[in-house]
Length: 463
Image (cartoon, rainbow, N blue to C red):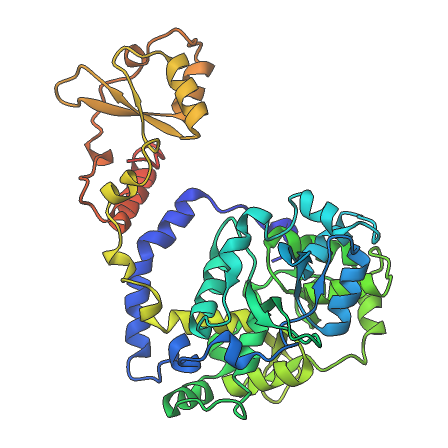
């Protein structure tokens, strides 16, 4: 739970998740049978970004010549989580509160220009990923929610914002430009019944769902003690790519509160030293807005609280006490809506692509070593293709092909083999049928077979 105890996920752990997901989804479907369904389309209906978010509600904009300090001031004053960086009417970047926190953590000067930060390729949304975030004002809120969740779950883009292109701005000329929509904006739209009417089904769904259905439980959230510094808290947030960290005592028996990237933005805007202890910083902010909600609250209550208090996270208190049992964020709500909306996924995971369909997506996904090939040839092929294993043709009738992995090459090197030694002479004609699958094998079944092979046959995670 503390950062020092955090360990990287091994590939077999991910395979276990993949192999289990079909069973998990079936169990979730069974558990939710008969309960009100909460899908993005059910909640947002046919509403578009342009219909729900009025001019000025999608946040301010910055220029490349503005500084990180200017950005921190803008975010702190507006309670926004990101701004679009626009130059002569052209979108050049998106900078979030997490970017400000990272710059603060790394000791960047508050005078650093946004153009320099964007050029450093340290932004959560790199220039090459901007188009993945752009939506028109006519985009359905349900589609925007899906895009946010997909980007948040992606390994290469952890930004949970959307950039609205062509939105009417608040300038006197009524010009159009770029705005930024966050998960908090989508949750806030649930409260604007004066602008649009939700269906009866949507109202029943959101009012019947408890905050405990959606929140992250406290044992799933990383922690810091009050004696740690703001620098330590930022490190936890950055390394784990999470947006909240609980502040607990050394024994983890008492929770004092939580810290988010927005708190770090405010600390930078206030000119606070990042080496101040969390405990001291929290005492100074004791009079800040209430960021708690009780465990008996429903989803409508959560949305209303986030909207009225202009916060993105709430600590969930056990009813009748001050005990924190979890944290809920606006993105958690979108995640939950997506999980309860099967139509957001074009097909069930266990009916997904086959092995052949995955292989067909890239001609370079498989490296084939020629008969009589050397370790040097295979090592060069793996290094240039960024693959981790090669198929090796053999002369054995029982097994015409086998696998050579990067670990095999390391082992051969340790045992004195050189670049010019042939692979086939080193490999034994072991039975490898357990590593072979048909092209028509569903990808999830292949994941399950890969997991079994990794656990029973020498830890090989290839097929």
